[in-house]
Length: 305
Image (cartoon, rainbow, N blue to C red):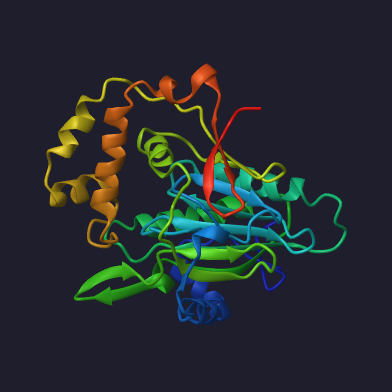
């Protein structure tokens, strides 16, 4: 069944402009969404989603969220009956294989629900010069249209509807969102805490890791890896000697739109790789790293049971 807009299917589109021209209410919804106040989410109620992470949740945490999306898109899929919700930070690396995994993750926790429907919220991208955002917008929409389930597009704040010009340069209006797991509310958000295992998760993505579901909601555990990367990190060493402009130019899809901490984040990730050239050493016995939330609300490393 095609992706549904106001309970109606629509033909595959050739541009996001066509989508918004044919569905002016999506434009209005996007304007309303991006005008909402930015929420600085308390780390003690948060489970953070990094690039190429997805998190499937029912009720173990209060908020799931992600930010630092420029050309990337933040994808929220929720079943209104079961309350099961998935948030993914998609960069276009494997869109056509990722979308079916997101749908399967939500529907697998919603099979006993006779009421409710699947609702989709898309936020991200902007009018970048290379049109990377536009291509990703179209691919995500097309991938959801290929699914057999009825999926209702509710929020579509993408590409030109998430664009603002600042000092003559295009940038995203919103870089991040949060999802209230209990109510399903999606809202603009920022995050000071991006763990647990922020550097390890970034290293996994930097070295080509694919989309991964990192959370076991039945046990309340974040599960990372095991990950693999080559011990030959000569190229990584070279990056640390480059100036900030060079790192932005070659390691970003949108150098002029990145948040201020992008370069430092890249350097920290590369430094982590140099300090851990043998990825196996981070996963004794080939077991993943596990993290659980303490009574104080912090995430800490958990022992293997």
